[in-house]
Amino acid sequence: MQSSALLHLLQLASPSLPVGGYSYSQGLEAAMEAGLVTDAASARRWIVDALQQVVARCEAPILWRLMRAFAERDAAALAHWTSYFLAARDSAELRAETIQMGYSLAQLVAALQLDDDGLLALLQALPEIPFPSALAYAAVALQVPPDAALLGMLFSWAENQVLVCVKSVPLGQVAGQRLLLSLRPELALAAQQAQSIADTDLSSWAPGLSLLSMQHEVQYSRLYRS
Figure 1 (cartoon, rainbow, N blue to C red):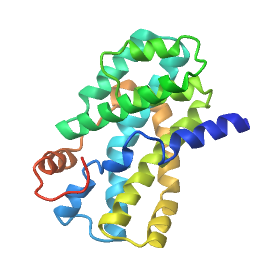
Figure 2 (figure 1 turned 90 degrees about the vertical axis):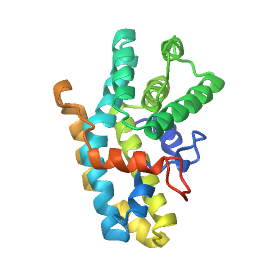
Figure 3 (figure 1 turned 60 degrees about the vertical axis):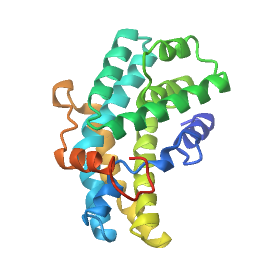
C-alpha cells in the first residue's frame, strides 16, 4: 500500500474521527447489565460472537459491496445495499446509531472537499446515509485499497468494543490490549468471509442481541447510546 493510502486508512480507522463511535456499545452495555459480560473471558466471547454472527455476515460484506458500488459509480447497487443495511438494523437504537454516525462522517468528508470525481453526489443522493455507506465513499474517494479499508473497519469496531469493556466491566488497560491483540485471527477471518460470502448468505440474525438492544432503550442507568 502506498504511504498516502495507509495514512488515509489510519485516519478513517482512528477513534478520534469525529463521528461519535465512542458513545455507542452496540448492545454490549445491556449485556453487562444482564450479567452476560463480567470479565475478560466473557468479554472476548461476546465480541467474537457479535463479530462472527453479525459483523462478518452483514456489516462487513455490505461495506465491501458498497465500496465496489462507489468504485463502479453504480447508483442502483449503492441504493440497494444502503437500504438493505438499514433494514437489517433491528432496534431503534442500532438504526439511530448508524444514521447518526453516517451523517457525521458525510458532513466531515463534504467539508474536507475530497477530489472524488462525482462520488460525493452519489452519496448525497441517498435518502439516508448509514455509516457503512459514508465509510465506503471515504475509502474510495481517498483511494484506500478495499481489503485494507475492510480490515480497518473491522479493527475499529473491535477496538471500540474493547474500550467499552475497559471502561465498564471494568478491565485494565493491559487486559484490554491483550484482548484486542487476541482478536487478530478472528478479524482476519471476518475480512476474508466478507469478500467471499454470497448475497443469499448475508444475515444479521442474532435474536439475543436484538432483545438486549431493545432492553437497553429503557435501561435505567447507562453510559452509552446503544
